[in-house]
Length: 186
Image (tube, rainbow, N blue to C red; front, side, top):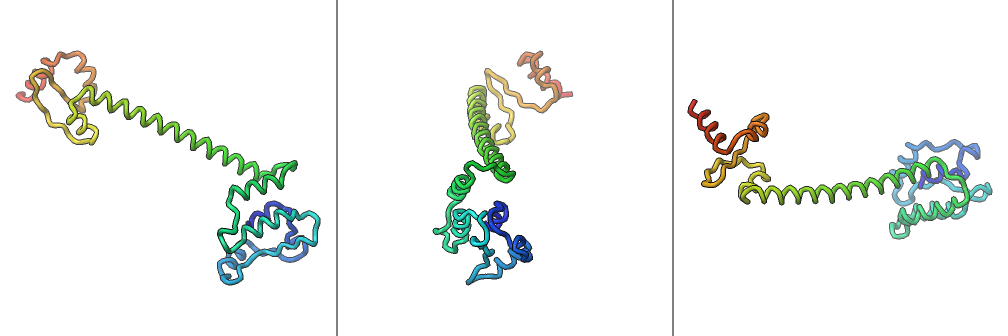
């Protein structure tokens, strides 16, 4: 809220009265140092007609030491928007609106992509469990090595050989078995 008073430009600042402005670092130091009587900038509403009383009231509400008496961000935004009705938006308002729109669209995009990811994972799991025995599929998903097993009706071969798919597509299962056998004995 310290920044709000400065950004809005509706409140008479110390520099307009000829008083030296307190530097931002000094404000932080004063806020950190004070405990019983916290530091608050002086907002003099009687010296100018440019001051919006509802803005001053909002700033003072935000400075309340009791958190339950402070307005939440939704209320602050709503009150600020109502104070600016009919006035031209400033750069800060435009940036805030752009960031809010970007954040909400980004959240929607992430949620949509997560749904797509979950759907694709279900599809790949279903395909994997249709093609392979459950214990083999579980080991593949866990990243564990799969020991060769012999079956009467089928041969399952896992390999990291470059272009193996091309090679395997040109061979029959028995040719693969012979190829492995001849490779072992040579």
